[in-house]
Amino acid sequence: MNNNKEYALCVKRLVSVFLILTTVVAYVQVFTVKSYAVETTSLALNVTEPEIKEGKQQIEEKQTEEKKQEEVEIAKNYERKVKVTTRDIAERKEKVEYKSIEEIKISKNMDLTKTCGISKEDFKKLIKNLKYDTSNFFYNNSDLIYDLCQEYELNEIFFCGLIAGESGWDIAQNHRRTNNYISMMSNGKLIKFSSTEKGLESAAKLLHNKYLSEDGPFYCGKTLSSVQKYFCPEAGWVNLIYTCMSKIV
Image (tube, rainbow, N blue to C red; front, top):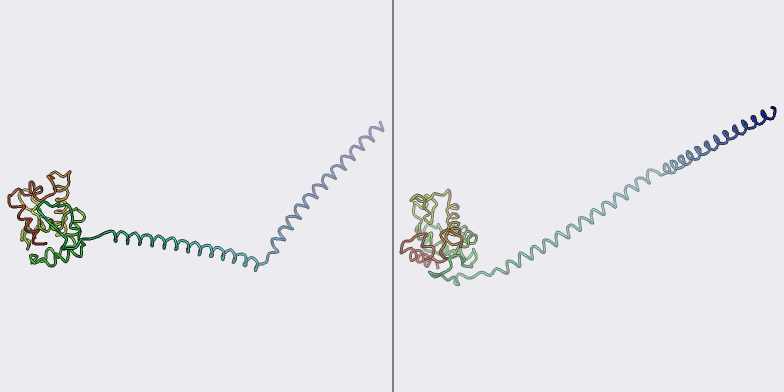
């Protein structure tokens, strides 16, 4: 019986020692972790304010330098693009070869969709010297007439000759009042346009779309006699328009 009591007492002592050792080990581990954290914090806190400012300044300087390099690269790329664009424009200008006024040729069988091939400057010079333009209508609108002929593929001499033939060189009052210069009709009356520009553009568009384009409803060809068939069937119309054209060149 005594032996059993002694054995139980011994076991209790061993358990107590084990618990004490376990507690000590756990405490040592916690202390070690805390010490490491304190040490790390101390190291971080050892960085002085001047050192922090210096670090920030270095970062900012590096970012500024990178930004400058990026801007320089963008500027170089833009300069290269501008040079290429300028060169392309110059090359295109060089490729355009205009005829001289003296080289302009007309005939009754000419293709009315072919422009004269002269520059706008020479066209204005040609119209300025046109003695029949006593009201200066043709010269005052020479820029617009030239541009419309380029856009709608009309021969400039034909377009001016048609206007002169239909409205007269001085532009008759009924044509001035309606801004209708090639006798475009509706219900037996001249169609009225809001401005000279609208009237001239409508005339150019009508000739191109209806009479001189192969898919146009009144297309019969690209000569004066072809246009005459539907535009003005009167017998003397071709001679009238061609005579006006001949007074220009």
